[in-house]
Image 1 (tube, rainbow, N blue to C red):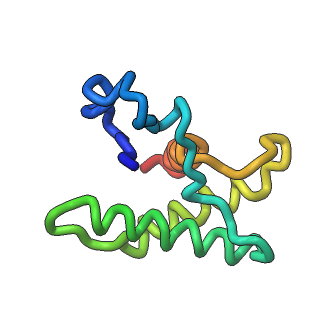
Image 2 (cartoon, rainbow, N blue to C red):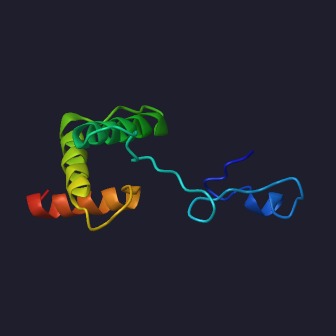
Length: 109
């Protein structure tokens, strides 16, 4: 199995009878911010902060986890998403990005 998150292998592998190419947004969907079953809202926010912090740390050569202010911004943004029951379903990364932008605009960062 190859998870081709950037699409660089899709063309070479497409059409092979023994190969299925999974591409984000098309046939591959990951819920990075999905809370474990049984988590309350606070635990879901902490889980999201941990997930984002880990992703940032491992994505860069000299990666560092999120700093205190970054954790606060992600946490407040996730709290807003958790409280917004009109959206339905688990929050997506794009939802979090929009919430961070709204937080930034409200706080004049």
